[in-house]
Length: 259
Image (cartoon, rainbow, N blue to C red; front, side, top):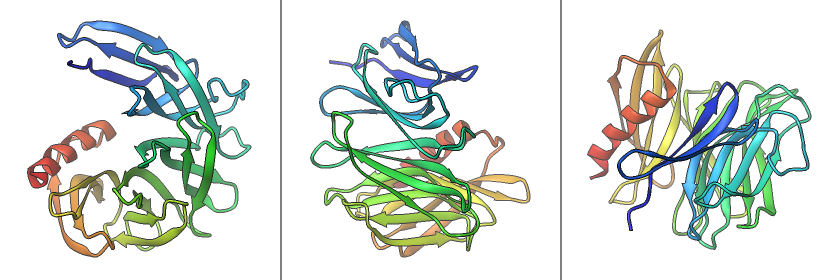
């Protein structure tokens, strides 16, 4: 059975979840009140795992802009929602990406604002019912370390990609299944971020993202092994600095290497 395309985002700060049939006609479009949807992941039980920023839909009415994760069925009926972050309503606690653990647990990552240490990476593992297994945060006392992408391998090793302002641009972290940090490595560009992590047929990882050189925006593709050792890195000039266009361009180029 062909599945209908799905799309998520925000319109005037109100998150929307839309479903289209295979001809591109709208099946439904639903508002998630104040939620912003940054990623959609289909789960093994046919649900949709949503990650973004919002008030915490179905979270007892918590009304502040937090890192948010929720789940709904394919008809857009919400099943549960959870919010995580600090006590400051600053809008800097944002979820960006999600992956699945081997037992079906949900793994989500993004940023949260620490009032002393600036923006840091947050990772949360939840059961399929939305119960928290663990939450972890990572970062240094200075600068920013932000998570934008996540990949989980067959051994439940967790790889989080992002950006850092300390020691380089591209950031890659490896966590164990219980959230313990194994290592964190940077790959130097003046500025940049890892927007997607893909596994190549040889078992190595492609880090697809963005690099910035004196306001010159480029797609960057970096190949590393499972221990984070750099194998090669390439950059390609593009005309747009838009986040979504960058991701589209990066994934197109990554699929060339992926195959």
